[in-house]
Image (tube, rainbow, N blue to C red; front, side):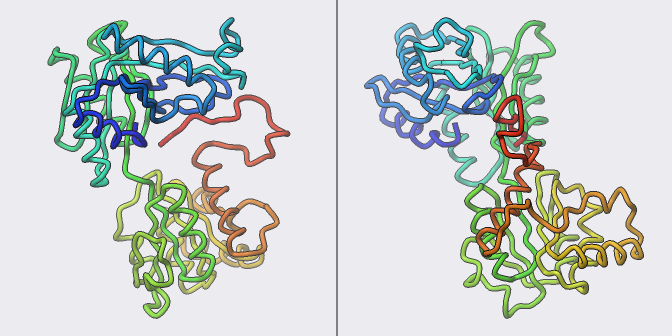
Length: 358
């Protein structure tokens, strides 16, 4: 819904009826993750995607049927179905799609405003005939089922999932047998890059492209300038360890240390490896890494804390240029975040796509 909410808002303002299709469950090598959305207006215009093209035609027709009947529908598409070839889902995956009449205008409006302002927001879709929708944010709630008890339980679950950036189906505790699909539109994960060097510039560019909120920090004001890092959301001139200790981080935060200078690295890594961040990587040769571990042990870090450090940073891609090195770094970060093996797909088995974790 994130990618299409502005279009939904425009249709809403113009008084155009539409139906909204949302992927609520997936299995195997499904082409899109839960939360992927597609909408179809009454005049036939379509935006978004639920399958990367595989079953769009079938979902398109289902959207028109829902607009005609005014009743929500759920349908599962999979390779093993007798309709597999007809709809084109030949990737071996399974997707379950909820199609519902247009959510209430306040829900769409609140989601659009939150995303535009960079505020977190969760949207809950009831998986029953009502397909009632509830938008939950910081002190904000729009829409609902009409049952205060259900709304309170769903809102609490949505807030908890939003805090962790999670998306998925949950059971409504006060109503046995009733399920709800909750999509979390969390704030972008932070990418903290330390060291204002050329590798930092390319990593900032790629990090922003991949949806991170990027900060570049260096103790040297002459190098830590917005002009040198145009793709960073913010550039900070401060001692790295001091900045990291004072800034807000969470389990989705990635710390990338590119300074490879002990007077910066050691104090910074002392802080980073004791914070609840999701990734800590440091640039340097294998010799530099060995010396760094010795210094960090002397500083009192435990083997468990040191095991969190990914150094030399990045995957072995044979990278030479700054751009290739940035790809290597971000590829490792993605692998850690998504639980990938970092192996060639020809050497792995099972689903090609890992579940999204926010």
